[in-house]
Amino acid sequence: MKKPLSIITATAILAGCSQSTAVKFTLTGRDPAFTDGKYMYIITYAGGPETIIDSARIDNSSFAMKGSWPYPVSAFLYMGRGADGEQISDSDFILETGEIRVEKRNEDEFILTGTPQNEFRNELPQKVAGLRQKGLSPLRTAEACDSLFRAVVLENRNALALSLLENELLTNRPGRELLPLLDSFPAAFQKHPALLGLRKTIAGMRADVGTSYADITGQTPEGDTVSLAATVRKPGNRYVLLDFGALWCGPCRAELPNLAALYEKYHSRGFDIFGVSYDANRKRWLECIETYGMRWTQIHQGFGLHPRQTQAWSDYTLGGIPSCFLIDCATEKIIAKQLRGEALAQKLSELLDRPPMNQPESGL
Image (tube, rainbow, N blue to C red; front, side, top):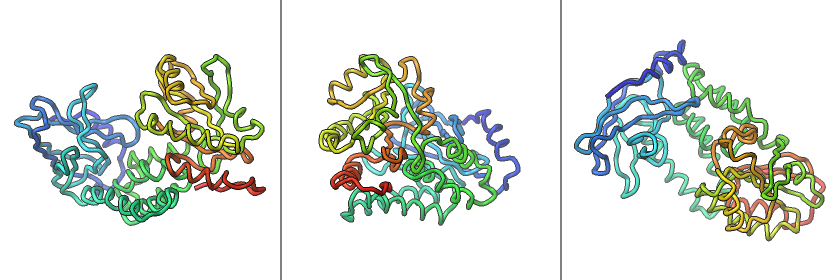
């Protein structure tokens, strides 16, 4: 077991917080899939940069860590680092006081168990699956899931609640709606890196549901310079989907046939798409456009830029791709975000399978 120097920084960040936030943990695991000689790492991204909390060498297909951290925190377990690093569980877990164990839920899935927040975290997928099986429409199902996550936050105010705020609620809801929830956390959590990071993210959101879109300019495959504003203001357009994606992104590829079908169905009724590509080179970009029949406007902002270096990534506070925002052309405001698959199809049906209305539409 080795302790990284970053623990000094983490302690300083929470200086002045109640000492009750400190955790003492053990984390153990054994499985034939654990490779002898490799190291298992506890990694957190709370507040932004990657921090290694602890690590242990794997021997006889098992490992054990015992340590402390200044605060409970959402973390990930990796076997190895860099190109050969493998995330052990599908989702994050909560590093909290107690004996945490790695267990195999099924052939392809590990979970972390043994402490209250992790046991509750492991039950959430079943709760969400139960909501999805009620036969509700995609939009109503999304609302039910949103209510579930809000209830968890309101009833807990802990590291798990911060994880749900960042990874579930902020993804789908306007950031300003979450500020009262952050304010409701106890004083000991107000300097938590994850909470401070959420406040910083929300403060920096230039484009969100209920606000005007932030314009984006880039080059088309033909070399023309075009803007999102030109598409939003194009005569006849009523709603524009701003879509961020890339050919290397599996979920993006999975969604493209759906976008092509919706474009074909609703384009004549005022639906348009403005695609922003994060492909690494022109050849892959053009391959993506041709393979998936993307007849809508596509731009790239420069192949020498990492996606996170682009102004669009910052303006829309993207956590990753695919990511999309639905814009009402009449008001030039964002009315929904992260609608995909059947949820996007249902929303467009509600908006466009009837004559235009004088009143602006409200989003999810």
